[in-house]
Image (cartoon, rainbow, N blue to C red; front, top):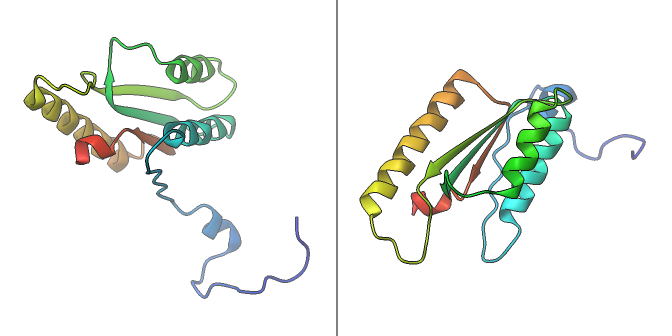
Amino acid sequence: MPQGQPTVVPDDGLTTRQRRNRPLVLVHTGVGKGKSTAAFGLALRAWNQNWPVGVFQFVKSAKWKVGEERALRVLGDSGEGGTVAWHKMGEGWSWVQRDMASSEEAAREGWEQVKRDLAAETYRLYVLDEFAYPMH
């Protein structure tokens, strides 16, 4: 850790601890790989800090087997870190969508669940995986 005096002290009236514990919104976007991996890396860190984690996957079918889901569920059930809840908010995605109305409804229902959990402060970390697709 660097020692000494900070070069800039924000004039927001908060202590360092209060500033460090403020909520953050992190958005990973762009073409290519790494967005979900980055989010699940944060989920692992949150789990290790005993934070309750809620994962909301917006384009994954409940039938699909996802490695990150299995790993985080096992960790969440281990009793050693935070809890992990996994919610699949879609019916699967392909380049050829046959029933967009059904997919839109599933995404809408998923977003309503996220809003309820945010209002109730159910989790300390929320991962909204593939959320840009339903937003679009």
